[in-house]
Length: 117
Length: 113
Image 1 (spheres, rainbow over the protein chains, first blue to last red):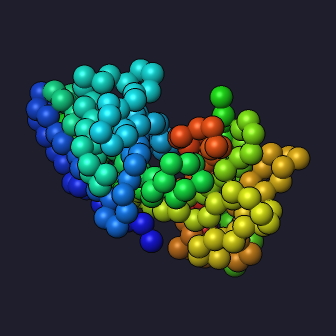
Image 2: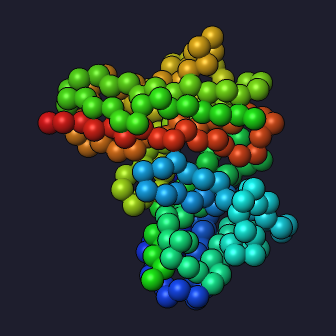
């Protein structure tokens, strides 16, 4: 089945630095990728939707200059948390859809635990 | 706007007993419904989905879900729970007009030995 690889699984960074998280579809072309943020004991909050070759669509309240998303190829999307602060500490999960419609499969990465100190 | 409700924060069940995790949805048009499971510090794993066809959908690890259009529900069930089923379960919904899924808040399932 479809596999999405997310890297790194854990990262600790100093406040003020930037962190890049990668999301790769390994055996399919992901026309659309999604980035979520999950707080402890809470549901997934959609941050943005990225389509290959175009700008990401950010959800209301998500700072696009802080959370930079690049979807340069059909198999790779990256999320860069710029000038990270402790409040950015969270669990970030990417998801990729292997087709244009919602009834296509949504495959999730294993998540990245970001801790900003 | 579409929405998904999981009314229970936590479900407790003894091993060997049947389990049900509830989900109701609000989607315009024909719904696409999904169940995912999440283990600690891991991403979501797909369990099953309903797009069309039989109302009873069978998925991974012995789980099944029943689509009930009149009650707008898609409850997750398993005839005999295992301790290893203990995890966080998410219901999600979409339709042909939406490119994204809407998730419920999740239900923690705890199966006791």
